[in-house]
Length: 315
Image (cartoon, rainbow, N blue to C red; front, side):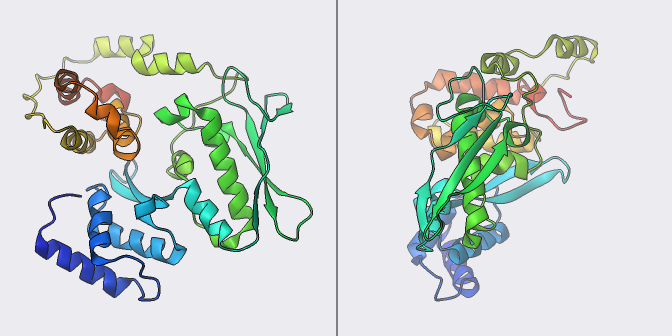
């Protein structure tokens, strides 16, 4: 959130100091403002205050990316809601503070026949991942297992690195299983399942990820047939002027996606999210012409088919 006035900052610091107990307060007034400015604008002030209270009680620091607030469009509620997400590092930090955490075992990956291996070289994601937590005074690790059919996500990072993502889910499960202190802390890799998004199915034993990516790049023929019988879309209004600054461009793309009711599988939202959280340099490396082409297509409804709720364009 940017452009906070002096009065906004003073009010924010005052409300946080009233809400968060003094013995849990770990942020200076300047740091509170910094956290707010780093939090997406779609997280309203009430949700932000709740987020800081949860962070304080959990002993996690948003400035160190232990925990953060993630807004998303809820199709059922038809509005933006906020999830409080913990990085896997934040969950590990919570476990380490207990003094009983001795680390994790190597993960074991399973194929559709139940064969396990510590190194996954299959053509798609593993069917399941098992990982154990080593705890002081316990002779054997405590194990947790998660399945692709239950947690395999639909977002771009799941297509790029499915093994890594499913392993993080398994580790988070194992840590919550052993340490009550980690209860209620969920990693971003689990967000698809938490928010009720349908995971990518893995019914054929493995998934051809290149085919999954092609589906995003080129709609299935059946969609093309449906599109042919739809009435022509009314001419779109001219797109608003594109922000020249790459950072402002990312925020404007996010706002546009929310305004059009597009969900998190939309290329526009994926772009905004990837840039906002971990790939800022990529956007700064694009040309103005490339961003303008993306901007024009987004505002002309060119991405509506990838995620508009029922009753909107593309469904």
